[in-house]
Amino acid sequence: MFVLVNLKTYPCDPVAVAEAVRDVDETTDARLAVAPAATHIERVAETGAETWAQHVDPIDHGSNTGHALAEHVADAGAVGTLVNHSERRLKLADIDGTVRAAQRADLETIVCANNPAQIGAAAALGPYAVAVEPPELIGTGTPVSQADPDVVEDAVAAAADVDPDVSVLCGAGISTGDDVVAAGDLGAGGVLLASGVAKADDPKAALEDLVAPL
Ligand SMILES: O=C[C@H](O)COP(=O)(O)O
Image (cartoon, rainbow, N blue to C red; front, side):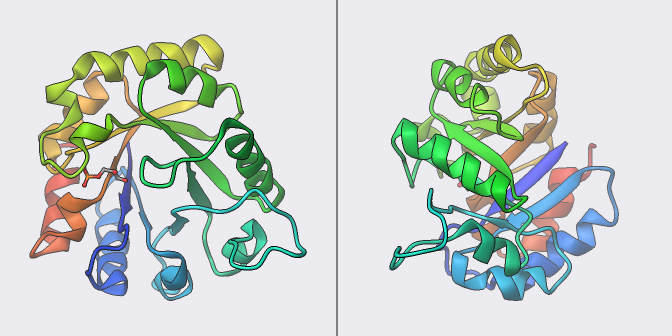
């Protein structure tokens, strides 16, 4: 299972969380990674934790003030990027352009979507993976795998119909090892989570709990 921890802009210590991700990753067969804010990518990557960006822009080198260039993100140490997160929605053409920009810079991509229909469209763009997240469950602590298991199973089926090689993550409300196991039982290849680790009093303990049953 792939466990990707999105730090969003939560007021946690990104380096401390990254060190916990790195250390817990060494204890499990699961793949752990962390997605810090753009300005923290370099420091987080230096910990040795697998580091992802939360977003890059569908641009090339040039006149793009204030944008995030895929090559710069890769140079800072990221190995992949989220695309179209629910809190950073893009138009379809820009999702496609972002996936191309990331591929150009050898970044893996996880394209996020709200529902199975969008997951099918996202899988058609050739990302490494897609992530289904019902927005209404994000940050609630109510896991999508319990609250809406059909959306996970339907997303897995929708992605498989388009491209069986595209893995499906699920996210929203995931915070325990039981949630991760439930996600896997529904066919997900991983989970995308944030508050369960980023807002935990002890992020390392939260990570250990997430991978304990795996
Ligand atoms: O990127 C992570 C998702 O938006 C899920 O957030 P959450 O784990 O706080 O519900």
